[in-house]
Length: 333
Image (cartoon, rainbow, N blue to C red; front, side, top):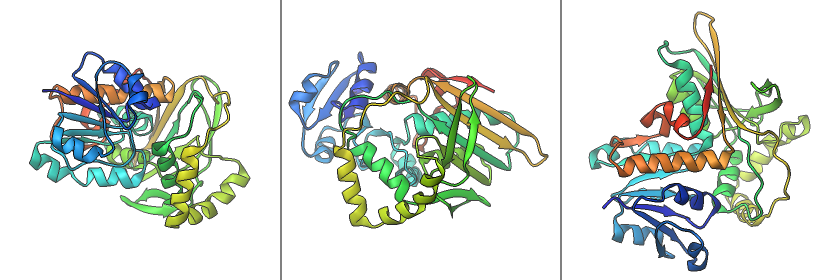
């Protein structure tokens, strides 16, 4: 059987992924029968103990949209993580996954994939650059409802870990909210970005091989006052009790609806080579959650049809830069 189990199928992202996977051997998994009944296209499984249910059912592919990693089954696996801890943990299982004949894919969403694939396209056929900077500028349409556990966890974890960058080929600490830049996008609009330690950073380093890498993001407040306060906020959120409280409160929030800052999503990669050459590439993509769902559905479908390779990967490392195009993106080099 080629069953694809979508965990959290009643949520915004899970339901969008399930919709794109109609026609596959699909199973929609969640804790609420009522909410799952609104989803379509597959068999419904209601469970309060997902790990035990997966162990008993042994599906072929698990799409995890609920946040916490579930890596111990015999299935192929993908998640939407974009924090350095989770992505690092999944990638560290590469040898074990190869031995077991399993494929683990982490970061199957806009954050990692848009940046990673742009770097891959920029560096195609060229030697290793000495420095790379990447910036993610997702456009997210406001949708009524709570933030949710998965997104709240990603946001708090990104801030609580403090600033990070690569220097000399190693991940090192840097100032959270530093490396501020004002970018002019290919459509003529502008945006401010600051460095944030998301999974983009790891993906860009692995995709380019550059010893020096900085990752910026437009979703974190980038005003002068906000940049001054970010290090203090990171220190406070690094306290476990404060972090847990912040995640709970943020997950329950229903943010006010605001118009998106831009009409399309963008990712940028700029590379510098040892000879002084500088190149830049952009990816133009649909709305961030639409792109994320398309990426996750495409990866899940390929894994279900045995197109993966055993090991642990970020999506672009496994399927190449064209994955972003398959999800609706367009490169501008």
